[in-house]
Structure formats: C-alpha cells, structure tokens
Length: 259
Image (tube, rainbow, N blue to C red; front, side, top):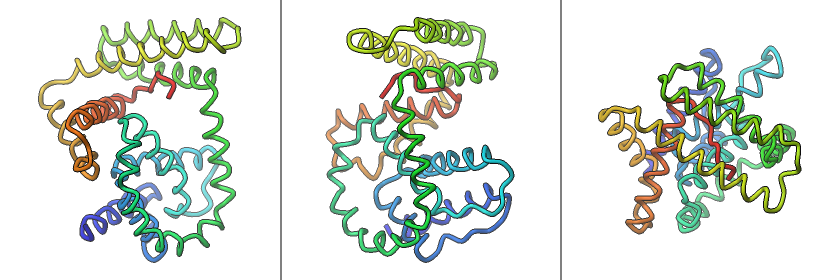
C-alpha cells in the first residue's frame, strides 16, 4: 500500500509539472499528506487528474498566470470530481465502508489544515461553481455546448445525427420558457436520463474490441480499492458505469443526465 501511495503521488507530481509548463512543484511534506489522503480514499488517478484539469481551466480563464499552481490549490476540484465519480458508479455505500481507513489518515490531513485554510478563497469560489451546477437550465446549456464540441470531433455520420437530434431536443426544452418544476421537472429529468443512455450506448458501439478491452481493464483498476467490499452484482453495475464514464472521457461527451 505504501508503494502504491508513493507511486500515486509521483504521478500527480509529474502531471502537475506538465500542467505548469515544466516548472517543478514538489509534492512533499503537507502536500504529500494531502495527495496520499486522496490515494487512501481510493481516488482513481485519472479522476484526480481530471480535478486538476478543472482548476487549471478556471485559472487560465482568469488571464495570464502569475505563478505556478501548487497541488493544494486543486484539492476542492479533485474531491468534487471524486464525488461525481462515486455518484456515476453508484459507490457511495462502498465508500462509507472504507471510512475506517480514511479515519486512520485523518491525523496527517489535519496537519495540512493550516495550509488549506490559506487557500480558503479559492475553495469558496469553487463552491459557488459547484452550486451553479445544481441549476437545471445551466446544466442543459453546458450540455448543448459540449455536444456542439463533440459534433466538431467527427465521430462519424451516424453519431453526428444522434448528437444533432439530442442537441435540438435540449434546445427546445430551454426555449420553452416555462419554469422547470414539479411534474414538468420530473419529465425532463426522465428524458435526460434516457437520452444519456442512448448517447453512451451509441458511443460504446463505435469502439472496436481492443478499445473495449482496454477500457474494461482501466475500469478494473479504478474500482480495485473498493472491490473486496462489494457484492458481485454491485461490482458489475459499478464496472459498467465506470466504462461509460471512460467512454465519455475518451470521446469528450457530456453527461446529459442531471445527477
């Protein structure tokens, strides 16, 4: 386990160096404790990297960078990406069963608290972004934008037809002008879930056998820290959901369902 955590931290450090255009920011001391805590909780490496990407995307939008980014700044985004991954794979209950291992790491996390507090403003700005994601109309607008980006990726004529149809349907919901509440909201959420399933299944159908096998192995790796505490049927569902998430990631597809 110690070797796996150390490797996880090295991978994070290497990635952070690349994101900082080669400027080396060491993951040591309290920063190592922080990242080791992610590994102890079972945060998959590529989920942690996605969280780091989110922070950098916001940082770039603020204009020219003034200084290299430390891994501490990315904490809120990494944990947010991990929460989304747990919801997507249905692992909330499994994560609860790992609470004892998380608690054993709590002392090192607490030692990091003082440095985290110094970055409170960044965390608070992240919280406002998280809250905005709870808006259904805002979610629909983001999905339409991401679908347009995916359409530009030339995934194939048949897939482009599906993307265009889904985008038009979401545009119609946004143009309706009615408040999305009550029964109307339930209908929209059900339809979003159905469109999301259709999009992912069509995306999976475009993969060849070798690509499917690669994604299955990657899903195994992501779920390995949780597998021993999962029933076979629960693992099968989580594994299938993990593959869906990886397909979205590879093809840059949005999650249409509002979860």
